[in-house]
Image 1 (cartoon, rainbow, N blue to C red):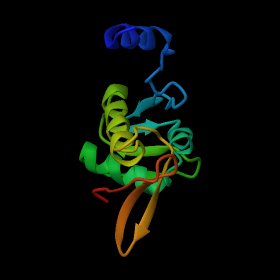
Image 2 (cartoon, rainbow, N blue to C red):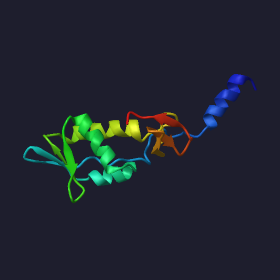
Image 3 (cartoon, rainbow, N blue to C red):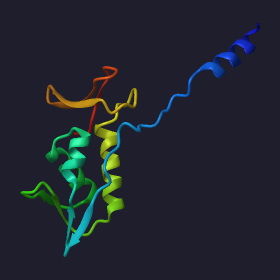
Image 4 (cartoon, rainbow, N blue to C red):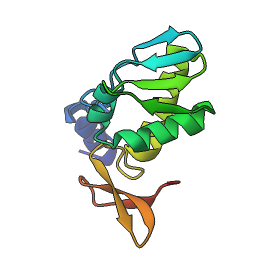
Length: 134
């Protein structure tokens, strides 16, 4: 058996690996308008799924959307201005790319750690550490 035959056989016998992140599913933002305020109803469900601090995610959203906001007593976020679900979803996707998924292995098994004043993304799966923008 020559090299090409062995390679073809190995490819045929290799199981398909699903590279998607099906096990990591962030809930779609449930938003509604109240006058000039956008209410993000399921904000805390999102932050729990991301395993991130509410204030950190809110700060990122405020920067991405260019607005102010706060978390009300029931855990919803109230953002000043009108924002569609798609815009908030895009901002959450950007957050997960920067602060949740490992830049080395692509898994969401990470946590934010503060080392010598710098916030790093540390992967529990592969051990990689990478700097974040804050």
